[in-house]
Length: 489
Ligand code: SAM
Ligand code: SF4
Image (cartoon, rainbow, N blue to C red; front, side, top):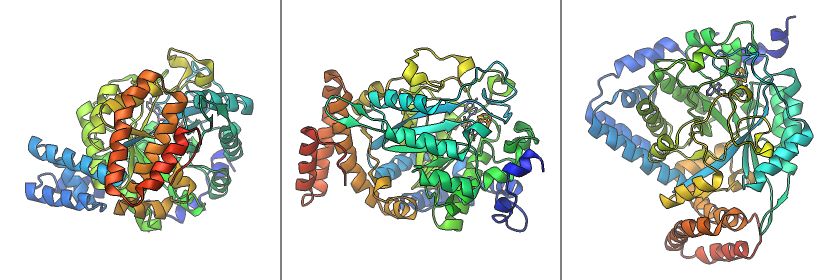
């Protein structure tokens, strides 16, 4: 048995296939894009009403939105995207920061600095002690949500991931007013078997993210050598089915934009994946990510100019928001502040800040990015505090809430709450409570002053929307102001 056959459990792919094939039919998706090339404006407006009712769009409807070029209709789409965001997620952004744990990788993805073929990369894998140190360095600047990122390597299998999650959750730091910790750890790692996913699930994983990179079978083959684990398209595209069967009901999908010149195909295919998960378990993805390829050491693919523009990026974000309206949308610090600001108006829900993608970068306190010590180069290097202040000045509140997850509002339960707008109520209140906590623990007097108007506005809105409930909210708010921590609804 060769090593690929040991790692990849064929029966854990085949059981999710229909008629011996995976659920991504390249030809059918391309045909749908072609058939909806010239959508009638009234049809687009009808589709927007369906999105506004928080209903997942069909493939044909997504294809029609992708075809819109008329500036007036595009403006209506952008407007609806933001309305949906406010309806489902209210006026908030959730922040997180990635923790890169290991750059050892057995795969040879042609676009990635961690490829085993890249001999210039200085490999590192954090020890458990270093993970604790790194977690505490992150907590010290106020992070409460971490995305743990791993290359694929025997050293960093499921047990290692589970142990590292425990270390991150254990970290404690005394801040100005209270003791702080990481309250949610999401994971971005290679696909795993059901048994391995159960191990990670039991360790308290938040969202399990695996990006398909490209849904095109042909480009996938070209980018991922066939003698590597990642070369197996089927193992990757079925990994979220396995995650659900292992009990993980929060999953995140993503496409590495820039790999496929036909980016509309990728948006349509990722929405097909979301609909397939809805069909399979009745729950769609918790998040979509839209990473775009950036320069990486040793990669001819990542360092070549690609055709995916900022305008394409913004349209992809808008169509994703409209197509699967209840799903969170993450735009990372790979992108510039300007593009992230633009995406804010299109309904994104999560952004990382104060991001370091070099291994051990938070505890080392490095200031500069080093191409040979990280996966790729970042576009937005603002600190967490700076981003929070920028958001507040634009009227957006930053939420550190992790209550939904800890109260069992995950999976199907959170999907229902999001679709009916109920989650927005909890989010709105918990955003204020956690934001107050963060400001009192970490922000400078100038930042507190800049953020106070947004808290006051939110409290006034809560009072108006839920007059009977407001006294309870006010009580918890006052408890937080006097130093109590981690109170939520
Ligand atoms: N090794 C795991 C895997 O490949 O699934 C997870 C970690 S990998 C470091 C996380 C993601 O980084 C990949 O899924 C890919 O989308 C993204 N990535 C790889 N190379 C990139 C590049 N040059 N620019 C931007 N993102 C990149
Ligand atoms: Fe390894 Fe992931 Fe990079 Fe591919 S994208 S080389 S699997 S770290």
